[in-house]
Image (cartoon, rainbow, N blue to C red; front, top):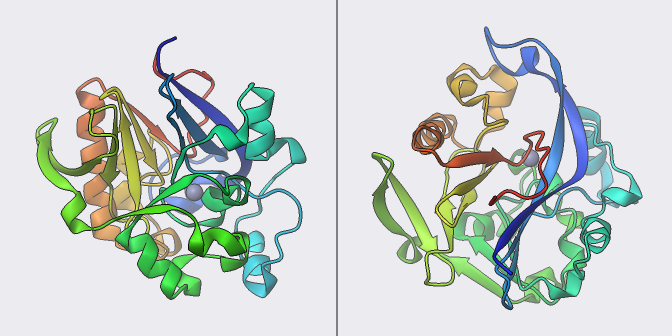
Length: 265
Ligand SMILES: [Zn+2]
């Protein structure tokens, strides 16, 4: 069997694009929370993000404020573990979980993978050490064991800077065989990560709200601009994604309305 890259929608929210971007499209769009499983067809099963948490969040007033601002729509069947099982994948067979960043719509399913190795950036570690309201992190969503989970913390020295698609990009070769590059895609959150799978599919996380919204990255309205960790680097990262797309790479953002389940074919 050859390697596969599967997409699962694990909860969703909706926003009016007109309130996010100046002079942009006006429509209320659904934003599913994408989870991506790379199954190398050997022992390696790498999850990129984990979607929303189902059930009670137990995240206090911060969680209530977050839910009021960005109301999630989450059914029990949206749980990442349920999605994997429905697709014939046992959650305990996941070997690695790469987190693009630590916002609630990306870490809600972390609790389902106690035996996985978590791939984090130095920015993630900084954020966990001092979670602030502005960083959009709800510590209550992460399980107690997360601090002691097996983890790979990618520091500056773990990334190699190289030219890709006519632009410079920092990446970490997760398995040393080029199959799965963890990418430094800064801007949205401190240490925000993406992934390039088989050089063909770029998982962009929240580096942009949608792969069709890259041109809007410089037209963020005040509030969406304020919630970026670094709005200028966010706009620069959008250029990198555009270059990848121009060179035939399939760019998939976490909240793209992906209809195909299988992304490598
Ligand atoms: Zn998100």
